[in-house]
Image 1 (cartoon, rainbow, N blue to C red):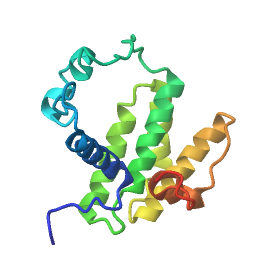
Image 2: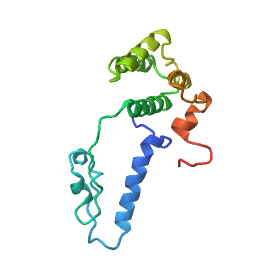
Image 3: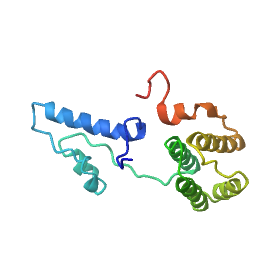
Image 4: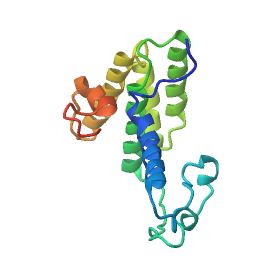
Length: 179
């Protein structure tokens, strides 16, 4: 078994890779080199330490720097569900016993430290009453979807069709809209 991870079918993995490849190609194909700088986002080690002006350079239009506020409950919830559904979408088809145990531990710890205390209490209780189904990718994806639907029902939000979790969180719609 190879240690190299296949990312060819991984939408969350290939977007950045494709972008950097395309950007690199654009830089190489350009005949004018006057305002071209080295791709700073590719320097991942130093990228997070840069100011916007360093990244965009003084000759380009710079986005307005805005004050970033802490997330409210809706923003935190949306980000949480995006993350959990994405984790489930890329969970192994046939996880090892260790992977199953690790996922159960992750969810337990995640629920205990979730910043929204009422949400945390609900999730801790829910994990005890309805333990995560981590024996396969499909079982885990359905479990996350059903948990999300329970929360949505409590909040009066629409219920998602759990038969479409892969389409929504991994493959995208059949019409190729997300490709």
